[in-house]
Image (cartoon, rainbow, N blue to C red):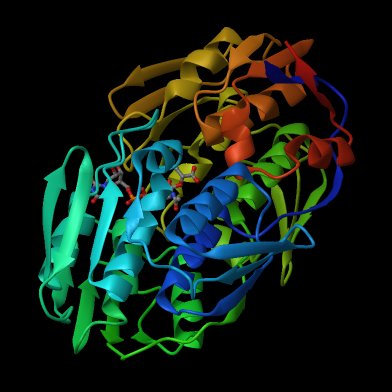
Length: 419
Ligand code: EPZ
């Protein structure tokens, strides 16, 4: 079984470039289903979640060619199926992003209900309620969601109970080919939503308000294939910036827009970091001690839940105590138990984690609980006394391309080993 072995201590400094955003690329791939023909996506990360989404599309009848590792040429003219089986959805729940596109293209879809995962129930009730408002009827059949539209998808006013990223995306994709106007109220505002809206507009969609809580869509009769570059991955960037913050840096991350990490970087400055923002880069360093600071995760532009684990590592060795509140997922604190094995002092009370900074961490064998928690444990190993082995690193490979070589490039003593 593969693991990542980190030796604590060497300074981590230098420059690293991030890939395109996992949480955009997967949806952009799904959106190509809505325009029969050949689309080209560039700056696509070479990660296992993208490979799974590729399998979903080819299972539907698309053909995919990989050019130079980060460019996908996707031909969806041959797509005739509207069925996405459990074995693929079980591998990656983001496969449900094909729901909106399939309904828009075929007026029907059969997609396996996604199970939960380590960070929560991951329900899709808001997706289904929103799509029902556009005229979709749903039934369940042996673990699958069966969607059907009698007549045309019809635009509607769709208020979301919560600014769900996935629900906003599925609704956005279904509404661009619906009859008439759709308003998505309380829409998610993440940069990945804007990236999807930009690509859909390039395909011929008429969308206003992406990035604000109210998105208005005027349905069109057809979309055309497109070439589109995936937005830089703000969470991969934040992960390497957290490494620089932890070890003192300076670490420069390129290939993303620092505005997409606005609140994270402002919080890091309050914790004692120096942050220099460029057009498509950011440099982080630290002279003095890390200062504890309360963090609450919220939908964008709030503090991103996908940066909670990496920030908890910083707080675990900061001066003072703080409270980390996880408002997005119901069980995204599994990292705390693993960090405690390395000497961290964290108490979990419901969706709050009380973190008391300790002088230092000690290396230990630990297990990646999920994608971001796994990456956070590797970061902890960078400053722990001795060495740390992180197992279950398939979680990390889902969302980080070349995580180990990139850290080695910053001077870290880290390697993949067979346990
Ligand atoms: C996306 O998940 C991301 N995944 C997540 O990134 C990210 O943490 C999350 O957005 C929030 O930013 C992808 O884009 C592939 P949500 P998503 O719908 O769409 C509940 C990572 O590490 N909810 O905003 O699933 C849900 O259970 C991953 O890269 C419902 O109850 O997020 C969760 O508690 C992890 N009903 C909360 O809302 C619904 O119908 C946020 O979910 C939909 C969601």
